[in-house]
Length: 78
Image 1 (spheres, rainbow, N blue to C red):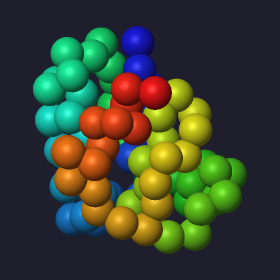
Image 2 (image 1 turned 180 degrees about the vertical axis):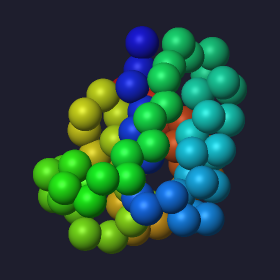
Image 3 (image 1 turned 90 degrees about the horizontal axis):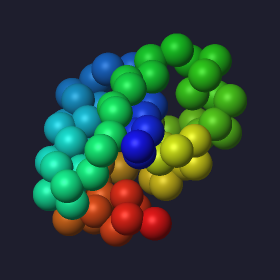
Image 4 (image 1 turned 60 degrees about the horizontal axis):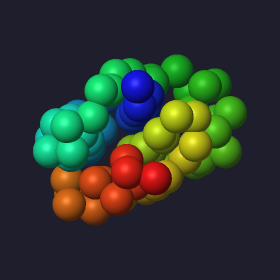
């Protein structure tokens, strides 16, 4: 099961990134969970300073940008 984490304050871009990640995961037919991480200490522990961030299985894949589902799909496949 893929663990997808959305790192951010819960702003509109964070919410959109979560939606896009869910679309990408469903398109790939993955078994997944999505967690929205809003705790600033947990976000900082990932070493990112710009949100929204996307982590897959504990590894940061993107931060500071709103990715489309098309851009997220390859990040979930690896």
